[in-house]
Image (cartoon, rainbow, N blue to C red; front, top):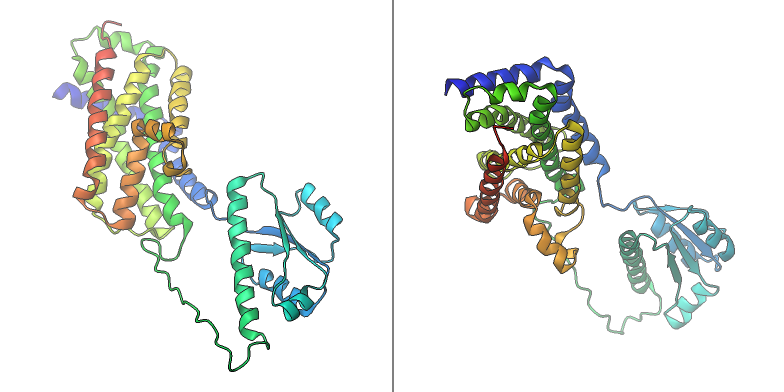
Length: 373
């Protein structure tokens, strides 16, 4: 026991002696959380929309004003011809072209119907789909207003009843995307830092030649591993604490669930990540190799975690592959607990899976570590 405590003390002293390491551990995660949480969003705003108004009527101006009143659209000059509008889209200066035909006002008044064409830049299919929904909603609202105000509705004519829909948004009442993103980004930062630091730690001992000196001492293998990895386990919990404070104070992320449940799950999850870092360090000889391999796994984990791309939207084979991704279970867990207030029984499945992964990965890491190397 004294040997383990001695190694732990030595590791903490080494960490706090290195000023660059302190910046990496404490300052960078704070900056990353503040920057990424504001930048990483799927909200589609500032959509450049161009109108080709061939009618120049009151109704066409009302339709354009309906888009100007929306916070999602940035309306450009409506005096473009159709050819000029297409050139604007080719230059990347506009995302949507709305062509209002001649006699738009007359057709509305006479036939109670009119058609307009909407051309959307669909290079980014996901963004184009959202833009199409926004445009459709505004046009439908405008159409309802036209029907209600039309002078052609006589007093004796029965008007169909409108259905009033009052949505109730659970878990994110303000529809603030940061509420959704911040917990997931916090998971990524905790994972990246602990994985990188643990994977490079033992490799650094190899490069300095101190590992060979340790191997000839009577220190047992489990004592060395616990002493080397325990400080990073503590630092992972510290980073989580800092991130939770920033999430609450800066981004007002609700924390409805039991915070001790979050720490309990994180403690088990960190064992899994540290075991993976140890396994990587056992099979590399330089810090560059360890960093490259750790980053290789992180890219796959991030892209298939469900943070930026919904898992339900992935192909079936990719959904099955995400079952091996530990970040997936942590992202699901932290959103369920913080945003939904889920209890222990609700997240038990995630905890059992992560615990199983932790036992397997650490078993492989300890088995692959050869004290005789």
